[in-house]
Length: 268
Image (cartoon, rainbow, N blue to C red; front, side, top):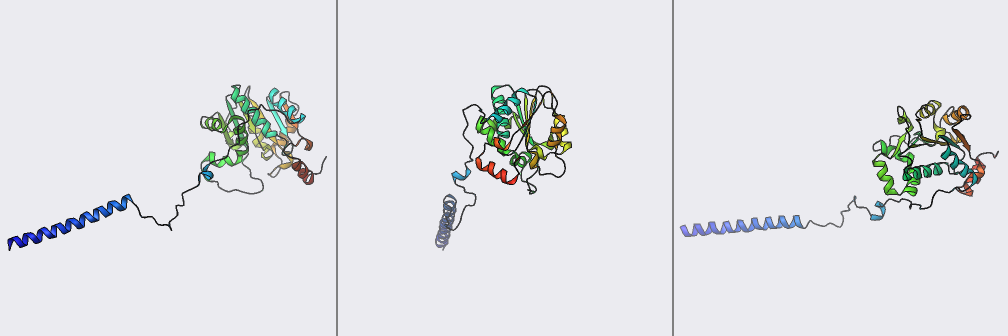
């Protein structure tokens, strides 16, 4: 009887061990080789082509004017502390200013570029944009980033942005700042500033800094008088201020843009 009982216990123990080892091996096998279901789609997967951001190739050529108006504008920026570029879209106001700032930074003549503009949408309200301040404001400054990427290279621009050599900030955040020497400041879309905002910006100018203000007084997206037109009227006769006005014939973006503007605005 004792031998039979011991044999039964041995058999039951062996069967239990076999079952446990089977479960453990099956569990380990399932962990090593998860079940593949053809109906499951990974929503996080993206193609490499989509994840690759486009950046314009760097231009190795120095900035050259496309017409006499652009050359006069470039000379004015080089020779004056404060330059106003006024005129219709497509004349190269922003491009020339951004390219000159990039060249000055690369050559070491300046130490920092400040890009700013009023955070005003054209005809629609974008609401609360996601992300931090830099992410929110990036949609307003993308055009200048493309210019800097072309003149300096995307890698250099990213480095300068991280280390404060290029600063992009809304106009509202300029209060209390001083634009020191070896700083190149560009205020774009200035027609969307109020008179008070323009006064605040202009009083940030310190010694030996370079400031360019661009805009089209006929394309304001705010109600009431705009700061650009007011500043042009107030500052036109100051010795170190240059007012450069582009005409429709100075548009270099395309002939179609010139024709479109002629249809929307009565030629002078």
